[in-house]
Structure formats: structure tokens, C-alpha cells
Amino acid sequence: MQDGDAIRTAYAGIAAWIEAHGFAALATKRREAEALFRRVGITFAVYGEGGDPERLIPFDVIPRILARSEWDGLARGLTQRVRALNAFIADVYAGQEIVRAGKVPGALIAGNEAFCAPMRGFTPPAGIYTHISGIDLVRTGAHDFWVLEDNCRTPSGVSYMLENREAMLRLFPGLCADHRLLPVGHYPEELLETLKEAAPPNCKGRPCVAILTPGHFNSAYYEHCFLADEMGVEVVEGADLFVEDDVVYMRTTAGPKRVDVLYRRVDDDYLDPRVFKAESMLGVPGIFGAYTAGNVTLANAPGAGIADDKAIYPFVPEMIRFYLGEEPLLQNVPTYLCERDEDRAFVLDNLDSLVVKLARGSGGYGMLVGPHATAEQRLEFAQRIKARPHDYIAQPTLALSTVPTLAGEGVAPRHVDLRPYVLMGTKDVRIVPGGLTRVALREGSLVVNSSQGGGTKDTWVVDDLLDGVVAPRWQARGQSQSQGLG
Image (cartoon, rainbow, N blue to C red; front, top):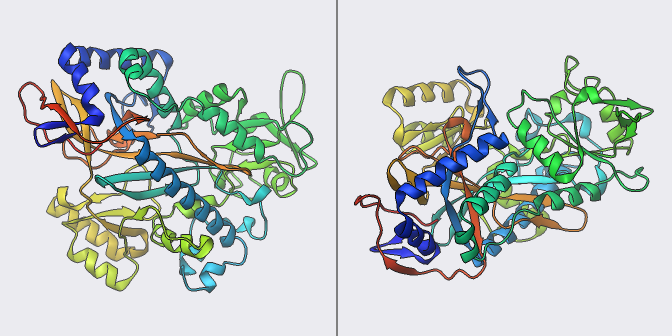
């Protein structure tokens, strides 16, 4: 936010608001936001822990701001990346030409838990596997963005992106009006159009779209219902559907209704007890047969999660070159695969400076942030890596940018990432300008996941922003704070 003793242009309006109204007013706005979210019911379920599992994700009322020019560059890189990931998934279940060419080790596919054997030889409508992707980005410099992670299975969090913007428009109408914010509220319309474009070959007329949820015990159940309401479609559980003659129907008060497209938020293993886990009560018997018969589309495609694997991630730049014949527009974080002898030796010798992650982990679990870990924790992870090296990858600890965040009685820098949502239809790739900014609320923490105590911010892409520095330095109650790059 600051450069020496001045404020970046991006945050000058925010600084002026705080100078005019004071930190007490900002804290009041934070309480109003919490009351609003609680009234609306915007919760994140965390089960298996003590206390009330339905929690509010902390919302910070100071937005994260990007210039339109920055966003346009990111959007081009995101479009390129998702096209390559989709091509990779298609190749995985067809000829595996990228393996034959020696660009990706075959063992990473053959032994991958996310590999969906029943998808071999089947091509979904229009060859689209990744209808909805969430790509996690971090910033390390004025012009340096890195892809931290790809989410092609069931990326979540888009409801918070939309609700955060709605909250800001209610709480700070004047401030929002003073900035030329590019809108995000049309995401549900774009999502619905993307899903309709994915209608199966045997769909006759206007496709019927529904969201398949595991139910209210799922951590993202609020989001499933929210998106269904915004799109004007039904949210259904497995028990609400049945298959007859390879056609999927949902039960309604007016009788059975054919379903053509299911935005499924149920994991692969639980989709169809006849094909996957026989004990599953969440899926629909026969739905996979309806899918391969061309009578229903499942979005995202079963098996798309193989592109989420953190051991696959290092090869995405090569996928871009192999499938698209282009150089990557977005950078990958250097990654060490612990199953490789040389990489493992390096990781074990440098645990104090690396971040170690489960190759198939999520939510910030199973992670070691070396510089912030104790000697005992590093020793424990070293033993884990030696016992199951194929389960772990490691990356350098990036100097992540920080953004101004309301902390205690003032404003302080906190680390953030950004998850834009990329929609891939038959006609185009759609990306609303912005995404979900997640913020590590604990001082010095690099873990932004809501399940690990992280919060969220509204992400403003400002149409006419020119970078620079203006105005006098402002501080939290006299404290000198070093703000980051936004």
C-alpha cells in the first residue's frame, strides 16, 4: 500500500475515507458486515471440531485493489492456463500423448488417486472437462504474479466473492461510487450460460440445469443453495434424482422432470454407487451410465481432479507449450517432488526455508511452513517425507505481498492470495473481473484458508487506476506499518 512515506494511488481513496471518518467508524463497519452476514446466513461449516460448526468467515472491510491493466494480463494468463489444463485432462483419458512425448511422467497419472478409470475412452460434450476452475494466485512484486495452485475438481468460494461485493456496496456506497469498479455480480448469469452450453448431445430444447449437493453437512452447502437461487435452478441431493433408461429425472410435485446438466458438488467417489463406492448414499445409481450415454452432462467432469494434484502442477508450463504451442503467461512456483531422490535430499536439507505440502491435500491441512515451524515440527515432517515421499512436494517460501487489513485498533499488513473463477464454455472462456481474495489474519501467517483461521476481502478491479503514490503517510494510531503491493 505504501512506498516510502506515501500511499499507493490505488488506496488513496480508502486512506482519505479513514482520515475523514476515523478507525472507530471502520471498526463499526466491520461489525455491521458481520451482522449482515449472520442475518443472511453466510456460513462455512467445519465439522469434526468442537463448538458450533457453522461459522462466519471473517470479512475484512478494506478491499484489495487491482488496476484494470493488471487484471487484463492476469485474465489472458488464466485463459491460457485453463485451456491447457482441459487439454491435459482430455489427453489423460485418451492417448496420453504428453506421456509418450516424455513431458509428464506416466507414474504420476497411473498411480494417481484422482485418476478416474471409467472415464477412459469417453469424451464429454464439446470435450470440456473443466467447466469451472479456481486458480490460486499470489503476488510477489509490482508486476509478478505466480500460480500457487489449480482447482479443477469442485472449486468453492465464489459465493463469498459475490456476497463480499454486495456487502461493500451496502456499507460503503459513496466509496464504491467514487471508484470505477468492474462488476462481478453477473457471475451467476455467466455460470448458467456456461452450463447450458454444456448440454448433452441428446438434450432436446432448452436444457434443464440443477446443482447436485451432498447436503447440508457439506462445508460449502450455503454456496450450493446461493448459486442455485441466483441462477434460478433447483438444488438437489442424490435422493431427489433417479435414472430410468439412462435418463436422469428429478422428483417434483408435478411429477418427474428430466435433468440435462448437473453442476455437481459431489466428489467422484460418491457420484454413482454402481460405478464408484458402492456404499455411497450421496450419489445416484445409474447416473454415470446416463452421462456416457449422452443424456446428462456432469460439470465438472469426473476425473478432472487429476489436474489439481500438486505433483502434476510443476508440469503445467510444459502442458501449455505442448498443447497450445505457446509460452506460459503466468509463472509457476518452483516445486520439488519429494519422490525424486535429488529433490527429496534438497528438501530434507532445507526444511527451515521451504513450505512442504501434501501432493493431494487441501484446505491448508498437512502443511509445514518451514521458517515458522519448530525444530520438532520439522523433524516430524522429515520422518513423514522419508516414509511416504510420493505424498509430498515442497516450494520456496515466497515473499508474498501484503495488503492493508483492519487488525485490532488499526490497520496492519496481512498476506493474501487471489482465486479468480474461470468458466469454460463451448463459445468462450469467461472470467468476471476479480475473484476471492483470502487473507491470513494472523500476523506473519502465510496460510489464508478459512479452515485455518483465514478471512476474505472484496477484490476491486478499478477501471481507470493509474499506479503511483500520493498523499501523506497514514498510520494506525501512530504505529508505523509497512503495507504491501495489493
